Length: 437
Image 1: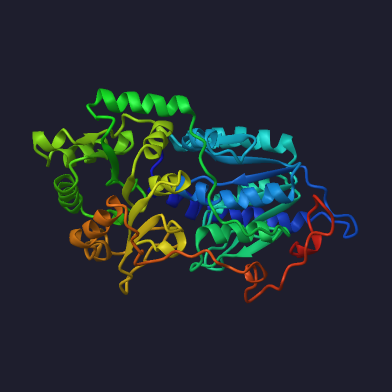
Image 2 (image 1 turned 180 degrees about the vertical axis):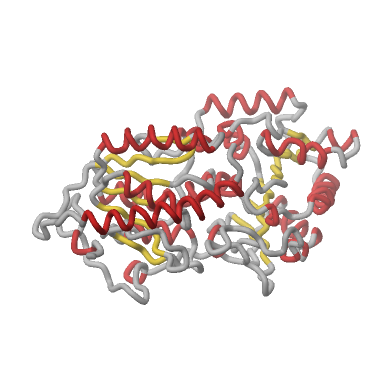
């Protein structure tokens, strides 16, 4: 798979150059004039969201709001191939186009193929749900959709391709930011809950069988632990020795609990090393399934579990979408943007001066280069005290509460906008909302 470092470089330099070139060409060719008296009748919408499995889940309230506003419209997705299996259990998209990221050549070839398919579909609206990618904005332009919606960031110039630019607020939760994209089209919604994942009974049965084969007794309670973060910003990891100490305390205090160490195939070496810190007796109740469960089975595992303890990463949002309780650790990233909402989730976040440090300007690269003091300040004792209460069935107030309570009439008000009028006709786009240049 093409590394995130290479992707950043390609997007910064290649994407920046292409945005400049095609912005000039677009200015020379002029924009098609639209008839203000006849709003566009919407038939097809394309949403583009490539990276971040968790972000794709957090975008589901926006998709649901679009579908309620345009009940007869087809809503499709353009994403990377790794996310295809997620869309099978995320019942909000009609069709999925994918791009293969095994290498730069694969990206170019599969993106060209996807764009040809997209152009044949003649989408009415394309919504670019990426926060800082220049190339994703170009994809919106090449889609030839009549209207293009996306985030406007003065710090990262991405050309003049958007008809509906939406100010990106670094201090609003990602779900709210995505909802603002829909709001720019005159779509209202009050439901910010992420879409529930639909796990087939057959998958749940297969997971139960696998667990029995690994020696997990049916009466044992399951606590999943995710020590991984993926390749993007490894500073989000809580120290492995902290996870080891925490798990040992859980095993000692709760004899009826089996801990399941999860991870993708790429995470298996790290998880295996951590598993080696437990003696043979402990390993009977600490099961390493890294690389052994696919995404569907992982979701089935979460469905059968009492709790997920995790770094800030994609499995956190999978668990949120499955209504599984979570304990999560934030530091370089802020839970204000990506934290799980609701009373089912406990968030640890210290919020020291240098935290958060990941943003669109530095393209999610932490300046501390691994010295993540923000994560080191989260102690095992305080985490175990809360986990103990959760496993005893007691309510635990989160030290950091993630709120999505944003009044609709205030959602899209910023320094350069006004309250947007509602759509002038059912199933249509309010064309007076489009930016005129």
